[in-house]
Image (cartoon, rainbow, N blue to C red; front, side):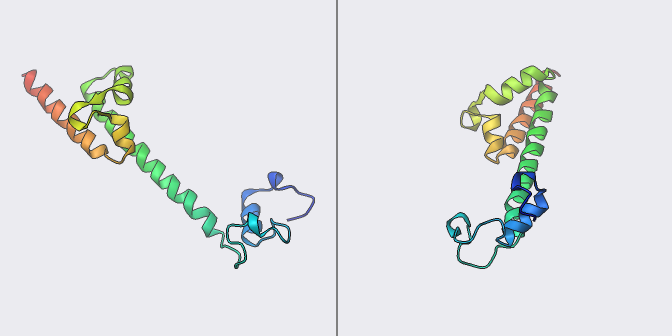
Length: 126
């Protein structure tokens, strides 16, 4: 990278290359490098955490969507469904909200709860 271009003006691939090859750090600034004293870290070392985080975020979004879809089969009003999702503790699931459970990776428990509620609702309306 040309010394005339500041890092905040450079594109991401250039920054990754510079970081991976140590050219982003002046000589003697080992403390600023996570791999101080060793060989330059591969660019993959910087990309892997963000890819893993993105996959986890997408899985969480899918779980939220599944729970909200199931809840809307019981309560079609979106505002009421969102209020339930965010604020209403579920007694049979440890008095935690659906949102807390989904974020803890327990969306299947919430979906099972909603399936039972839907089945009970259907049997009452017969």
